[in-house]
Length: 137
Image 1 (cartoon, rainbow, N blue to C red):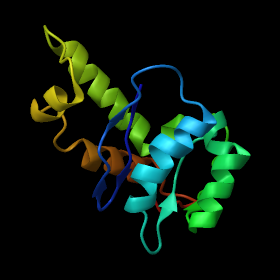
Image 2: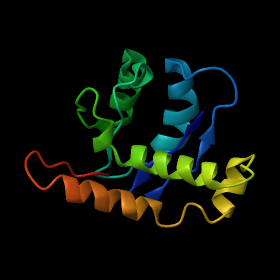
Image 3: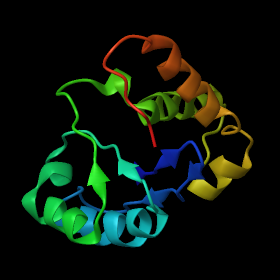
């Protein structure tokens, strides 16, 4: 499993969860503490879906203690989340290759990623011109 975060101002590093599934404790210790906390700044609003580790009390408590605000997220709405479009674009890019890249580093240096974030945000902006309006950070 790979985790990544994006914003209008940039992106986090990709994090590979090599073994096992993403538990609440792994999400807090391997994602929130080392990746999200340093990335979050003034006015930061975390967008995440309603996956169990994301909404678990221990993670919500950590975010609250760190002063990281989260966006309320409607159930079953992956099309609203720009990173889902990025994962889709990356997946299609990987599958179009005759030989798939073996590491995250190979993929990011292959030139398959440029412009993905901008295209994703343009898609979201184009499909969300009426209320409610979400600012995506």
